[in-house]
Length: 228
Image (cartoon, rainbow, N blue to C red; front, side):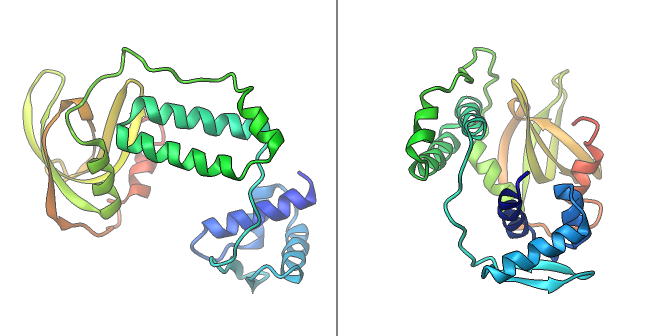
């Protein structure tokens, strides 16, 4: 990676983080020495980038800092287009419209050569007859996850056994053609995954939950690292 590209990526990386990031962490991320990171950070500060911190403690950037227009290469454009087409085919109409809106905004930032690359894309996601329908509102489920709202529903397992569940919804996971709702199940006192197509009577409860050790999204992802 050229230095100019690395400097730009460092800025993007710091903007994504919510805490100070050490030079060693940046060095591991960008596969360079800590000494190189010290020089890069100083070059960015000298150029007016609002980065604060010091060696051994960590660096943080002012989130109000506006970056110059983002530049994409041909593969990145194709990956974005593929992801948006997959969202359109495998989620719901509301989320598909959001994906398309994001794509239009990205298009507005592209140079003429990159717009030309859009006409050369050869990787697609097509609608599939194997898509398994569900009756829950996909957008409502996402909103409950975002707002940390408890939800309850009736669940039917593969043998059609019925149970009433109340969970802390944490994630939606796609195993095409199946979508899973992952969360902390109050009945089982453990993480569980529920197929959207086997959920009935989905209800958003009035109460919200707070992150508790052992019950968070990070914990869920750790338990699911070898497959959900």
